[in-house]
Figure 1: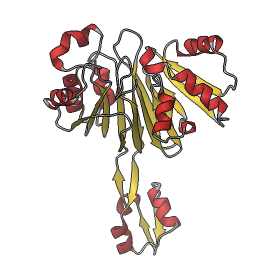
Figure 2: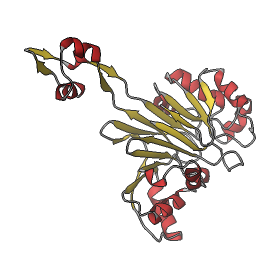
Figure 3: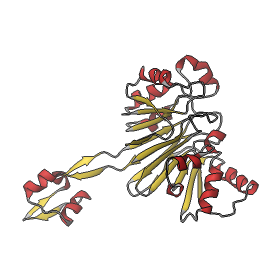
Figure 4: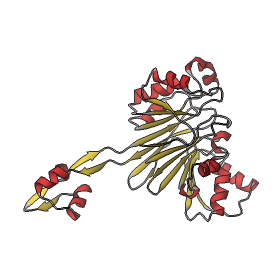
Length: 297
């Protein structure tokens, strides 16, 4: 699973940072968290195919999170996008997309599957992952998201060799949780495999500190969290209903996250070390994301 940061800035783009967009690639799925202005050019600069996007998860409808979406849809249409683009977001997402299509008609339409949430919860169950959305606390309806892999079982080669079980269909059955018969003995998955916890990635942006932040970030292998301001600008963060960097560190520490990557920085911070230091007062394993950074989870 690879996470690519295509936009780590806040309200407006700068020379160093574009507006919000984070791309999660895993197998056939390409999940785009937010789609700020200029996102499709960021794909080009990173040499990522735009057609890899299978779904877009919008946190809210402020411009720095959605203004690239119309261009993305238009380009996918011109690229003869073969599938259905799934778009998820807070209430009024379908209505706002419909207004866009009336104002700026797309020459090459693609199939869209648009869904919106109020209370949130698990909204998609794939063959080996789930997606969850929960409401956050911002000036407009806003959602945070979590991607959760299913737990799986890894073959215990040493145990299987000792038992004399040959590689092949029997190994596959055990890995899928089925007991098998071999050499007159019943062998269970617990004997032959090792449980592996599924990876979790959480995405939080544009919110005050709320219990849903902790719920989404619980046991995350990677927490991607906004940090527009350091905690010495608490009043400004509260005024605009954002987290501080120290809030992000507190969420990571309390929720049991393994790694924290800060993003969504105010243009006042040309150097993010102050923000990283602020978050590290609560959570040591903190770094700042940069545009075009790719991390593996």
